[in-house]
Length: 171
Image (cartoon, rainbow, N blue to C red; front, side, top):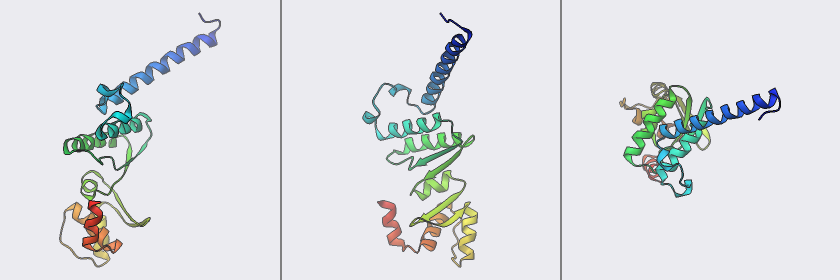
């Protein structure tokens, strides 16, 4: 029993906050499809489920910007497509910055790109803007494929030879 109005309000607020947190956690766990593993230690989860838990943690903060580092690393094709769908859903409400070496994936899910080599930005913008940057710099190629534009920009602006680039992609 509460002794005064302040204690009564505090008790009600604590209940409301706790209920809201539990609802939000359940909602995010369902969205990231980890509710069946809610009682397992994260260290005992597969790589795919660890990635999902990481995404759930990021989404739960309700920050306007999410930074995802290699979000599909170690995932199989089905898990990658599932995660990409979630990223598209989240991107409707938030800005997402994805750090990845996977140019194919970047070309498919990112609307803007920043290519970095040796800590320096070597190209940035939408695919068509990067293609224009290449053409203005004297690099000619006829591919309209987004992945090829990003690869060509990296090769051209970073000065990486094709065989070195392919070696970097497989590491």
